[in-house]
Image (cartoon, rainbow, N blue to C red; front, side, top):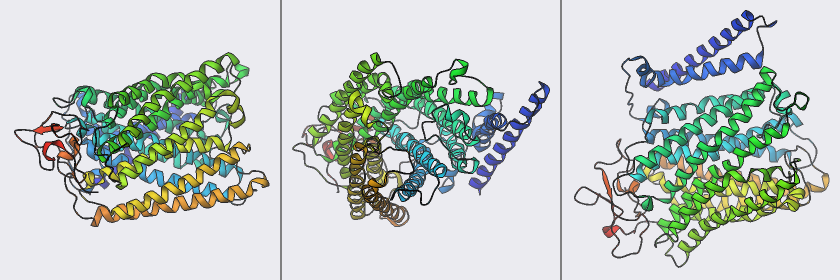
Length: 621
């Protein structure tokens, strides 16, 4: 089979180049007189760079792109059927599915690790894992969930639907888009083999000096995250150029759907700030393999330097995770409320305001790290200021819901939950932005609860809202709505019971990232563990519903929701070029309930099948 040949070719080229890199490094070390030609961290690092190049070349980059660099004819790969999802494809829809399938599996795996952690934390003492094993599970859970939050929506739904929503036939750089995805499998491989290379001791933040001194697994972790960052940067560049230059005629900035606006701002954040994380881990890697002293005080370094560089990326990364989720929530609320989206321009301004402020708030993560006191006040104020544009997004959502004719479908329920959960995360974030309360709550379970309300309650709930909203368009099949609503209520109740309860032990001073805790906390932790097991079980409903619908679900209409935006004005799933005729955008995407509102778009002399007369929005629920 073509897919098997491609995967085996990519793996074979990757291994070949990996060993070439290791061997070449050994030869050069011997040539330059090093006493030992083998240094595990050093040789493996160089070998990984070679192996990564071999992997992407073997997967199809050479045939479809690399040959062109030497004046040779390139190959065009167009595979039909399921095999296209396992090969190098430049179709943005295929790449979107590849991202989404990959990170859905990663999400479920990371959730399983969370269950293992809560199993250990059900009672005080060490029952199932020693401290090193617990730290490894904790670190993998953290970084895998971060990867899901960063890439599942951006890479999955962003790749699939941004071109459709703006009337384009593909992304601006299709081959770069394929490269962005195929950089991901080596990341997953490197992370998943860390438990067999000594484990992770430093969590997902990799603070030095510990990250400089630990096992080889930390080197693997560094390489994986730098690769993931490269993928994110390339993807961000692609989205920026696509949205600026490939919009359909009539698709002015004031007519962009909210999800596109959120992706546009997210792409700029990825371009501006992802380099910070890469630079931080590059410095750690150079400290490990080259004897540099960036973070060694004896050599003139400073461990706080890492925190500044790391959080300069990692707080904007919170918005890389959540802004697409808020865009999805507004997108869905706008379509299922039966009225125009409230304060559209203010919501767009809020996204841009977050883009402007996100890079000047990082040091509130460092109030207890020893930074000068004169920095506390400015970062406190800037962190509080960013709540203003966030509040405008809430205003848009609540104003749209108010007096609307709501259709409480599964996508709408998840979208409403995004607003509820993220409001909780935002309010509790105030205590962590203010220096006096942060000093008490830093590194406690209060931070765990707040962070999960922000990312899981916002981004992950939005991911499921998008899955239920766009599943008919992506697959051409419809799922069971009753099971989807059961999944919502199970997940919503289980999530809130689990993480709302975590605030209390945090206020009492229970530290996060530890395998043990005082026996006085046994009762509350046992309750949290039981609630988390219930939350985890709810995802079985989702998996069963999606698998059944994918193979045996009834055929979906082209526009089952009666929505106005462009992706619903083509077949389900869309054809290769997205639209049979180029669209001409003539109206606003959210003008529901307005009798004289023009259709959002026209195709040729008339409207495409599935567009409601007058551009209105009826449809099923």
